[in-house]
Amino acid sequence: MRRFLAGILPIIFALIMGLTSCARETPTEEGQGQWRLQWEAIPQDSLTLGDPFHIRLSGALPAGSRLLASPFESVPAPFALRKGSAPKERNLGDSLTYYSQSVELAAFEPGHHRLGPLPVAYLLGADSLLLWSDTLAISIARVINDSQQVADLRDIKPPLPMKRSRLLWIVMGGVLLLAAAAAYYLLRRRRGQMGTLARPALPPLEEFDLGLVKLQADRFPEKGEWGLYTLRLSWLVRRYMERRYQKPILEMTTAEIRRWTRQEAFDLKLGNRLLNWLGVGDQIKFAGAVPTLAECGNLMNEGREIVHRIHESTLSDAESDGLKGDGAASAAGKEG
Image (cartoon, rainbow, N blue to C red; front, side, top):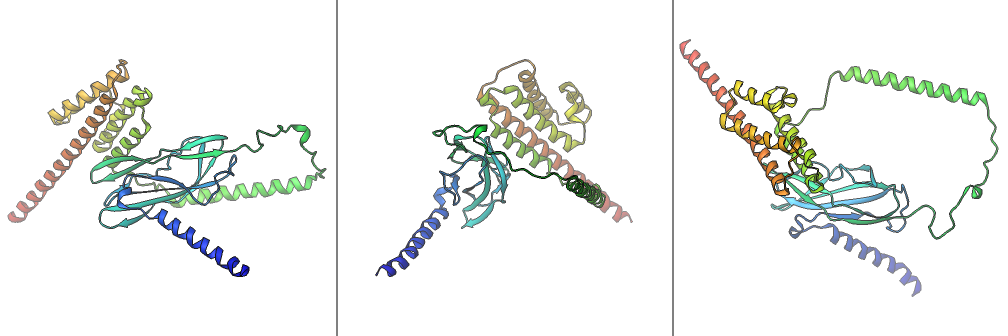
């Protein structure tokens, strides 16, 4: 009887653990917007400084949406990202898409910490949206327990005597020199093969929307850093216009931008709207005006709408130019 129980109990325990883990891993439609941080098979009470531990972030988004960036792109202190995998997605019918991502972290400060909330930025249609995960409590113990007597140099045993040989150091130096020369040769060879191949940049509008999501996640107005908030917001708008029109708008002042809009036959109503927006930003950056949180949000919404209007106007101009070109070509064909 004892042998029978000893053989059957581990199997029953494994089945129960497997069922509970499956139940925890399966999301439902009610979990939309609830992103959870969970441990991955690691004891919570045995972590010390520098020990790696695994965390999983999971949640659901509406179908048809996609993540703009990894939530672990900027891990807050005192945690450091060691390695991680790309987010995995799984469709849950026609309404939800389930995402999960596992990473390996380490902490370099003892004490009781909280990881999160982490920003979950995603794109749904033409809108950039932001969710926040929950938090996870993590305790990091010291290598030497506080209840014990603190060790000092007298507790350390002297090192064992070791013979020193000049030949050994010469050989090691030669090996390191050869390795450095080989690495330098391979690097030069790889650069020569790659040439000027560079990573393709995001389209201007998508880069702008992603910059707004990151700026919103930094929460500068809540910290009282209105000047930095307005400076980065103005930089995003100017960066979009510089890439769209191929002009050094980042280096222009507001007065120079006013002259440029008049010379380029810029849409008068849209140009005045842009200049008024830049003027409000200059009052905050240079005149020391203190906006409210609502005014900061309105400033971001107005900048987003101006950029999208500029994008729509440039697209319509390109389509009209294409129609003119097609009409001229057809007319030339008829004359021929």
